[in-house]
Each structure stands twice: as C-alpha cells, then as structure tokens.
Length: 144
Image (cartoon, rainbow, N blue to C red; front, side, top):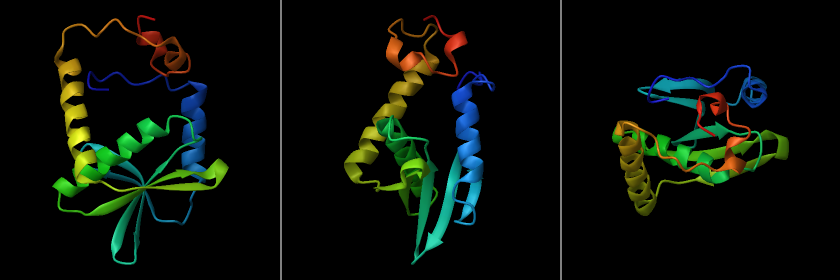
C-alpha cells in the first residue's frame, strides 16, 4: 500500500469482506469514516465516548486486527480524539473491546518505525510464510 499497489479486487476474500462490511451493522453508527490517512469501518457515539469499530469476517487474524485498531486509536489520540475500539465479528456475534494503553501505544509506534524501514528499503526481505500468503490479495505481486 505504501508503494500505491492495491490488492486484487477480484480476490474472493476481498469480495467477501466488502459484502460483509456493506451489510453488517447497518444503522449502528457512521460507516466508512475517513480521517487523514485512515478509514474507519464504523464510528459510534455513546455515553460520552467515541467507539471505533473494525469489522472482520472471522476470529482468525485477530492479532493483526487488534494492531490495526490500536493504530487507529493512536492516530485519533494524536488528533485529540479519545476513543475506544471494538473488533466486530458479525458471523460469530462477537464484540471484542480494544483500549489503547501506554505500553500498547509504545509497541504500535515501534511497529510503525519497523514498517517505515521496510517501506524505505530498496528490496523487501526474502522471508515469506506460505501459510499466511496463500489467500493474500497481493499474492500475484509477491515473490512466493
């Protein structure tokens, strides 16, 4: 994404995610809120706080979804917006709360620094994980 490469739009997982996103949580808040360089799936106001929801199709890859949501919460905090997060898994009727704690914020900042190093490097690292790669929408761009 940093190099303006978009995932294959006909990838079945991209299509499923798009359909889920469009149909889940209708009338539950504002959808597709774009702020700066982030796009929030769902934003709700309630009981004096802002809730940012990230919609996922399953409980798999929760670590990445949580990090993504923590990044969004960190960016919002930098803009003066205190918010809490929810990972929403409609198929499983799950709502997993995510709160940006100081240690998590440090970890996310370090992760961003590492990602920036990768983006700035002339050649990506060679290591690949076959299990992670098989359903990736960037698969045809990759060296796997």
